Each structure stands twice: as C-alpha cells, then as structure tokens.
Length: 314
Ligand code: NAP
Image (cartoon, rainbow, N blue to C red):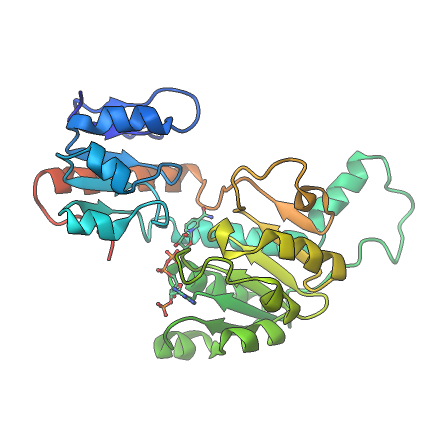
C-alpha cells in the first residue's frame, strides 16, 4: 500500500512525488479502488470526480493531507478533514484567467449564435445572405450580472468592461475596491436577475447555493437574456431551466458544468438550439492544467513535510 495516492495521471511534465501510487486506468478511479488504496496513505492528490467524505477518511486513518487539483471543494468534506487534522489544499488563482476566458467565450458564442451558425453551414442550410438570419443579442452596451464576484467573477467583469458592458454583481459581501476599480454596482440576487441582460454564475456550490437558480430565480430574468454557468452544475435546477428556455426567459444558456456530469445525451437541454453545453473545460488550457497540477503537488508535499500549504482551503 502506498504512502501517497494520486487519483489520476497528471498533465505531461508534472511528476507526482517519488513513490506515489497513481491510478492509470481510463476515467476516474472507481470509489472502491480508492477506498482500498488509501488504507496506508498519508497524502492524497485527488480530482473533483472523487468523493472525499467520512467514509473515505475512515478508510484512511493515516491521512495527513488532501490536495485537490481544482479550486472548488464541493466534493470534499472540508469540515470532516479539519476535525481529523487532515490539511486540505486546492488550486485557486492559477486557473482564474483561463476560466474567465471560457466564461466569456461561452457568453459571446451563445449571444452571437455562433454554434447555430456553424450547424447551419455544416448541414448545407446556408442559402443566400438573409437580413433576418440568426439575429442574436449584443454584448456591447448591455448589462452583465455576476453572481459571485470572487477571483473568476472579477476576471469576467474586467473582460466585460473592455467590451463596453455595464456591470452588476451580487454576493455575500459588498466589494468597495471592485466597485471603485470597475464601476460595478451591487444588487441583491433578485435585483441582479431582473436588471441583467446576461448573467454569469461564478460562485461555489454548497448547501446554501444548491439550486440557487431555480424556477423562481429564472422567472425574474429578462426576456431575451442569457445564463452562463462556469461554476458547478448543482447551482442550477436543470428541469426548471428547460422550461425557462422554452419560454424564452432566459432566451439562451451556456453551460460548462451540468448536473449530473456527464449530462445524458438525451437530456432535453442537450438538443435545445438555444443551449450550448461543453464538457467542463473551464480551466482546460495546457498551461493552466500544468499550473494546477504543480500547485496540487506543492500542496501535497508541504502537507507531508508538516509545512503550511501554499494554497490551503480556508
Ligand atoms: P472565489 O474567489 O472564492 O469566489 C467565489 C465568490 O462567490 C465570492 O465572491 C463569494 O462572495 C461568492 N459566494 C460565495 N457564496 C455565495 C452565496 N451563497 N451567494 C452569493 N455569492 C456567494 O472562487 P473562484 O476561484 O472565483 O471560483 C468560483 C467557483 O468556480 C469555484 O468554487 C468552482 O466551483 C468554480 N470553478 C469552475 C471551473 C470550471 O472548470 N468550470 C474552474 C474553476 C472554478 P463573497 O466574497 O462575498 O464571500
């Protein structure tokens, strides 16, 4: 049994600590295999597809550090780790700009109807130039509402400012520094949803935020508006989103994350022309995935050596 367990091959160029046991199979490590492998483990480098709960901690009595290669920790029972003296690390900051790029790419793609245009060309349906063809919305001069103006939400706001968009945000706390820097204005969630032309979700999934965007929240969104989710699928009630998209409030959605993942191909959202879904690739640039893996290894090694983690869960 290994002292260090790594639940997925790391990106090229990043080495796990010497002596690590690495799951080499296709896809996420089966939970039963993980439970067996952690029996003697002192360090665990895990992914968001792994469930780190009381059951796993019971199976790993020698564990001292859990290092997740992601910033979101909704799959890790951080409190249970804390109670047992297990340090928890994650990968904030290094993925912020890439995930904000993805959010903006998704927003621009659905607002300007890029996937529908590509589908039309591929299907041979592109006829003569048509003044009514694929009329969409605008980015410039519209209002973007950011739910969760933390690292990623602020980075999305900076991009939007460059596109001439008006900015709103909501969260648990006002951010005077951000308001001063970007001219972004605070609203409560109902106010943000009813005033925004486009809404980006960039907040953590937890007990308070599960299905934050439910039928009632969606009904507040403007006709013709856009919903983008680059955070976690569980923030949005997907059944309610199907109905809302059919009614046109919002008019379109772009989802990097779904509930469940993968979303079944026969789910109604998958076939809707006004819904763009991509397979959780928010931070998936070569450079950023390498940086995430390097930080996850640094957290793991620091925890095993009894040093403070470079990026500890707070
Ligand atoms: P962050 O810096 O911690 O920002 C999160 C923001 O959410 C904070 O501004 C926080 O507000 C706000 N928030 C927390 N709870 C809230 C609530 N109940 N209601 C409203 N706002 C709330 O985190 P980040 O680095 O930007 O990452 C955000 C999330 O994005 C992660 O948790 C992760 O799930 C997801 N993510 C996804 C991908 C992807 O591949 N799609 C990549 C990276 C991250 P306060 O400051 O007021 O507390």
